[in-house]
Image 1 (cartoon, rainbow, N blue to C red):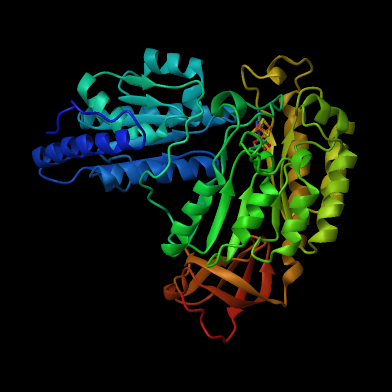
Image 2: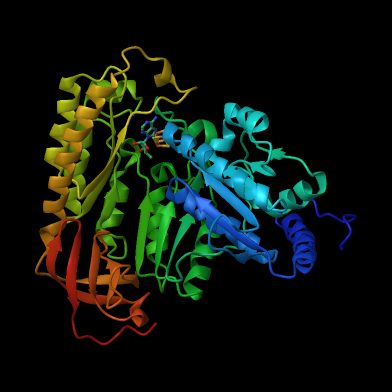
Length: 479
Ligand code: 5AD
Ligand code: SF4
């Protein structure tokens, strides 16, 4: 066992030290058990959490755990979401199940992290009712996983390490990527917008942008490992760089990334309409590697509701922005998020939302029932909308969104377009599944050797939200 005498003060050296200590501990336990110890990471929520989980998995593998199948693993970690109340309920439900597993296997290690852990009431509930949990940490210190595991194993009771906020961004820790050919890349963390319904600014803290040099270095290293597509991630990528010195805009960053050799596709999310610049539209129009897909959350089509949501744009401004984007990037696929039942939403407000949906014609939309999040301004607003009214509106919105989505998705039928092949089809092993740059899903006959390649596919038929296609004869790209 290594001693703890010389613990480096600087990151990431400190974490590499703890990874060595943790590796010794894991190896010792594996020898006692007579088998390798397994881990299982379950991710709830958004793409940012999915990327965080890749980092957590990277550290767990580095310290000697092997991937397990499910919650019967020796080390179970839930990376939680709290954006809507039912996300929390799901985690509490699953914790009940973990408790029964831990009764059978007392040496099992249970850890919780992510947005839900940033809520003080959640921590209190865990302390009161879920004492079998070994480790709890938040969204700001995931890089510390190895150190936290070492400390939790030493202290034999629940270890809670949740930070309120931080300026720290730790680079260069191990990552276990889900796909070999595409990857998320964080460009910023946190959010300063304080939309009145949203808990994210409270749990993810203030905006912090990564240095462009670090982002480019990461992308170059991903390319050298075979990555062809990156998804630039942030809660509001359009305000990237505001806290950097010298300032860098998102459009500038994107243009630099578009110039990197060896990258075929660039995606990004999420964009806040209020911060989407003319420069960004120009860069998207000029660089074919930037995918023709924009996720542009609407939230509501009513200017009055938008005002109360603190979104800082009007219905007309949103529609005008969509016109400018479509004029510059014809055929772009637009997707969105919409909330139904925000406090005070009237039928007339809801009709405004339907009106925007009909005018913009989204390729797809995530529709959410408003969820009251304690601590946000909207939670104490008057005129909360009754459940039956929300359900009725939600049904009508979904029907509209789905019908338009089907028609929009089908617009490329009969064309031949490049598809990045992602996986073997889950239902039919004779097919592979990939995506157009617009993000539409395509299934076509092919074998798994195509995975990670970009191939031309004739889009023969659109079935709802996906295409059935046929690969066109071509020389396979050399990769
Ligand atoms: N209730 C319902 N939906 C919400 N979202 C964020 N907060 C809430 C809430 N309190 C939705 C928004 C956001 C998406 C990620 O989640 O539409 O864009
Ligand atoms: Fe939440 Fe608004 Fe920030 Fe998006 S922009 S994370 S909805 S506060």
